[in-house]
Image 1 (cartoon, one colour):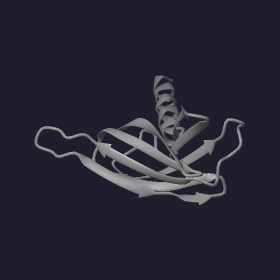
Image 2 (cartoon, helix red, strand yellow):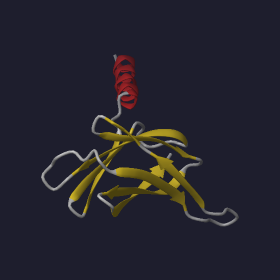
Image 3 (cartoon, rainbow, N blue to C red):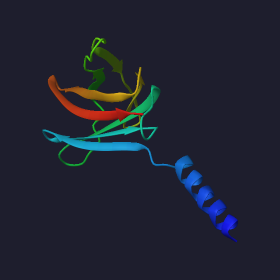
Length: 129
């Protein structure tokens, strides 16, 4: 009986890991709400699919902006700073990009938005496992 209970506990734990929720974070920037979602939680070293949705002050989806993603890791002892840039493509109402974190650790992610000639940016901190 004890073995059965332990086996069931392990099974539920492994199933929970297999179906973990995507990494999601949301921030306000001016009149916009920027929602960022990655397909891995926590994000991993290597490729991570990023989806960005932008809502205006009325809650309507913004699909007429130019959106880029810049991500960086600050310099550390014996290692220079790493800076990368990724373009996005609009699919339906979502801006999609693939970003490649070259190593685990704390990364800074900046989503840069230009709409009607007005630039806007929002910063996120991401811990890569």
